[in-house]
Image (tube, rainbow, N blue to C red):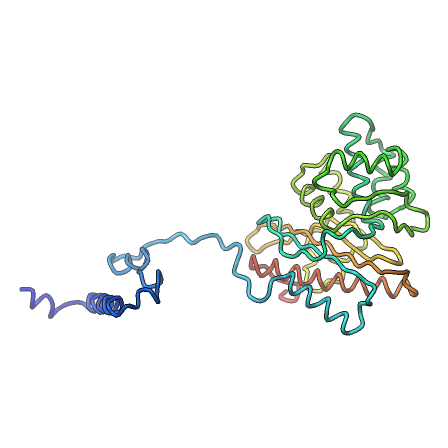
Length: 333
């Protein structure tokens, strides 16, 4: 009887027997160590041969995907070195960068991010934080006048508005002391020591790229006083170096940012929110600062060219996020 059963075996059974013979022979030949766990049939693979009906499987979520190529910080570092070789960055110019994936709570790039650098107007969101902390403590009120000045300070980068808040809070030294006492872990490199002059040429206030990143991280998590209002004013339409003219970043990407510009510094810090094809949002932080040792001779051309370098890094950051989550870049559109 067994002879006839073997004679009329189905092709599927024959294939199964041959596969088992092959695996047995491979194990006997001592190849188990070479193949390791890959040689063992997975449960879903064995089920395919044991069941006559297809078996439904649940696939893992598609995020994040495997990213090919060098890590983002290596790619940014290579780009900066290339710019130096081509004479687009001078020897007296230092750069610092941070890219942080909020969706997975992981740093993608961090270059010179703990080095204290000049802040220029990048310090203004910290001044806003100090004022809203005073409001939360009942020491100040967020009046219509304060709201207008807040928009002027963040959207228009108005230096007089920033100095108004500093005076309301007791001056730079008092703001520095209060921020350091209330947010010591977040603003580790902050040094707020002077008002912002009318010319905007303030060089003594300092902070690190890591300070900006930690601030933006906590802002998005809404663990800071009046986080929603700070995000609102940071999202108001204005010139920026992270989205505008960044060719790979889709124009529908949301942005919460603040720029900083002097004859010695070009920077931008912000949260970008990419929109996925799956209907999800993918927020990430990007901070870029370029500081020059002395004043640029031709300010307008220098600030525009350095702004373009930040835009190129923004392109790289968005492409890294797009690769992680299967998003489309602007060129894909």
